[in-house]
Image 1 (cartoon, rainbow, N blue to C red):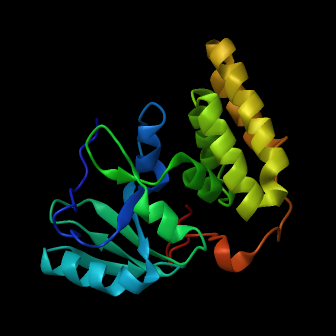
Image 2: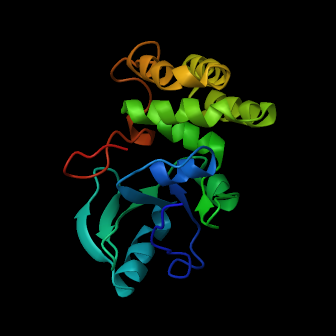
Length: 208
């Protein structure tokens, strides 16, 4: 397991969860990613930043979405994202935990965030995470997507199907995920509520 900065003591008392690439390791095989994404409620954002900077984290830039990019004392980049989603309090109050003990956003909300992202990698992550999800977990994912992003329900079913196919044909998993990202799962521009669907991360144009 890749070692990332441990901010649990620094952010003690502030509800937070991991999202992004590092969070996926709680639900599938770990993959490489460039930074650690921490999600807090917008009301706690500046306090989280203040604590991290007091602990030696260096401010690098603001994000395109509300939040900041920091560098840890050992050189790792960390995005602190200030969220305001209607489901955020529930997600922060009921985190999952990965093998390292870090709080990770629950699978339904991680899928929701990745459905809203624009990179093929995010869509591939969804397929892989759902490939090993239980029937109960899949129903929870369906319920969250239906409530907060019903226009994505058809895409979700496609990825559930592809995930199960990957489990049946592991040698073709990479091809299946890639085809789905480039073809069947392409989303028309401008879909959904832009306020609640972040399209990028930093002022340098880096994506979720």
